[in-house]
Length: 278
Length: 279
Image (cartoon, rainbow over all chains, first blue to last red):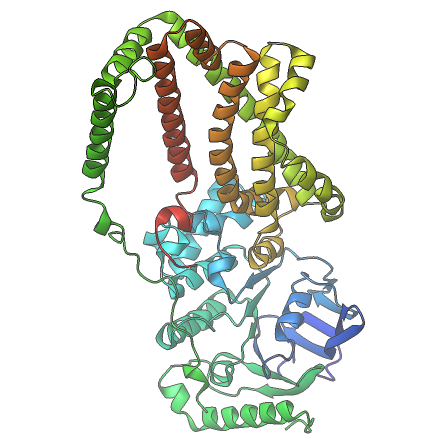
């Protein structure tokens, strides 16, 4: 581990950088008007870390995520996954999109949806069946393997999408506001599911959300993005106990403090004043 | 501020399998009654002398003629010829339209280049090509094929172009993020997205193809039902003319039922078939 941590002083200690974003900039060229969605983003995720990314709406979270996932080329800057530059979607990365209904293939059963990426990975059939069964069990959908996604509720559909990502055995799991379209109770369940899977699999997770509570509840660290053109405004270590609970954690005094802090940062980000990091 | 409550209600949710049951019960019965009333009217009008029986024989006579003919080999031969021209033409048009549609769907520039030409060629009625077909192929089956293919091709091709352009960007990005290459994306994403469009095109083309298959035989005189109708008319066998017309109607209904069944099977996952209004 020889990386310098000028932007991420927290946590990186002995863990090596799994995901490294350096000087990322994205300008959309729309004829005469060029829109700078992301200005200069630099941050790192250590191996096995769960980091939440929050920011005011329209701050380029989705743009950033697409650049990281290799779905879109940045105008400037680099993304590295385990030391390798990301130029196209890398095999070590899985994305869970917000729009589960459109991200899952309606023409395939639940298990076929989960299995398809594994087929493209050329895994042998027995191994594929194993991974599909394991990941569906992990999200509690074993008995729905033969159902079609549209026969399931929204929360269950997003579980399928998570199972598909988990079965892919990624080093980094990107989640783009995955629970923005499900109801509050389902959302709490899914948050706990993400924590549980993260702990069990040791996967590195970058969780993008607009929900401050969610970011603090889930993350080991919260990155606050500024208003567009976007930079990292703040990097907050969430020093809550690793064992989190929807009821007690959210009532924790420290949780309230952190939430207030992130909230204040976002308010500042909205106004466009870049406050010094706390 | 309470960000935890800014969630939208879950779309989709529970299915309502009985949603269509409300109007169902009386439909088949009413349908049968309607046919019975129609047949009765047909039987009555010539018998009551409303129209001359010479040009409009009662339905019983027509159906009897049809039944008698249906027991002979030449009848089925003619049906076979018509179906052969229809099926072969439709198949060729289908394959060509799908291949070309997918190729051009992937090349927007070529597509833009050809759009004006397509928009010009498409509205040309196939029957306008009859003299050309006769000139080139005479009464050969290739004449029929030319007309059927020309008409069916555009119907399917346009639908394929719409379908290929309708791929959901989220589905596309999902496929790409999971490492699906170009061919895999065509197979697992573009093709299923296009299928509903393709089935619509096929359903339209199947009906139009039958019309042209019979038209070609009727006018050009290549063997088949169309030619039989002309022959019957020239021999003044009016009941037989009607019998053949009914046969074409039955053929059309059977083809339509067949294509619909295929559509339901192929698109059982699609909103249009699963009978549910979510997205």
